[in-house]
Amino acid sequence: MQRERPLYTPEERRRRDASPWTKVQGILAALQFLVFLASLALVVRALASGEGLALANASVVAKTLTLYAIMVTGALWERDVYGQYLFAGPFFWEDVVSMGVIALHTAYLAALASGALASRPLLWLALAAYAAYAVNAAQFVAKFRRARLDRKGAPLAVAGGAA
Image: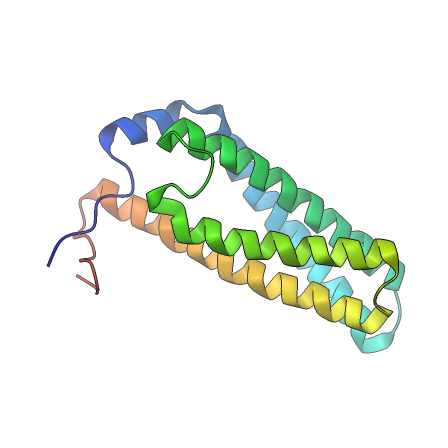
């Protein structure tokens, strides 16, 4: 069995550490997660009680704007570290899922702006976007845990299974 390459080569790690986007990504990821939690509570409240729809919608717009910001700066980070804007080998699947997350959030904005969906289906679309975001966030947490293990010299996963 062939061992998976480390998340960062020594040169990629140097570029990651030198990139101004590394810090920006950390800040935006934390901010986006906080906005997500607040918005999730507002969306669930609006679905459950019918109250606070305008605030729930505004919170989903805010969550979507933070998503767009982290995606643009993430592409800049990926270019700095791996030499391409998206779909670099080590982050390929995270980027694929991110495209689905962006599509769902953008569909929400389009439906909100056009009035294409009634309030409840619109809120359910927001929850679908949030479920996709949660999967994507879990991917990134696992990836950064792997980077920390790589740095500590822990055994790498082998292709096709766990080490």
